[in-house]
Image 1 (tube, helix red, strand yellow):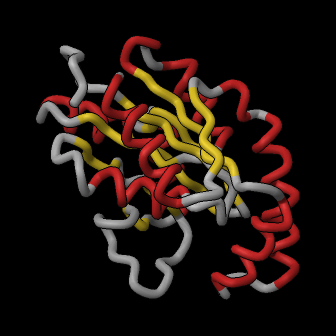
Image 2 (spheres, rainbow, N blue to C red):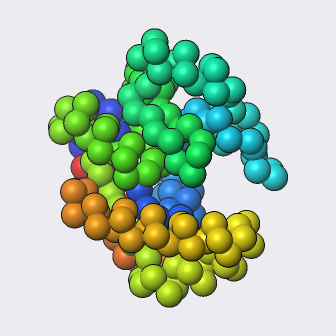
Length: 189
């Protein structure tokens, strides 16, 4: 368990298909003081997703109003949809004494890194073993047509180039080892 005195924000980024969500859920199961920040988005819910649990699903108009009111710690347009992290939500969770995970893309992560105190922030980038493995994982998910997968792979290459800006990098080539690595980072900060 952490020996710090104030709650932390853990930024975790990865290309689509790198296994970030699986790793986050595995570590959260062992850390009751760790909670997930639910982001806002304008995209439609996917099968099995629930409003306020997976995302706050809002209209573009609502999202733009939130931007105008400086409600976001970070926000970005990803694949044509808006995504953002509410600064108020982070403050609320910290008041409860919770460490917060931000599962966000690189452009959002870089915004947060500029805004938050470095003592409060730990950034972690999850890497796939290689691009071919990443492609196979995306295909196996069966969520996207090949054209979108190719777009995700192009984005992944750009994101990976930015990974050296993070405090830590974990290669997810073995799920058990990657889970231990992530848990160790989050438990020792």
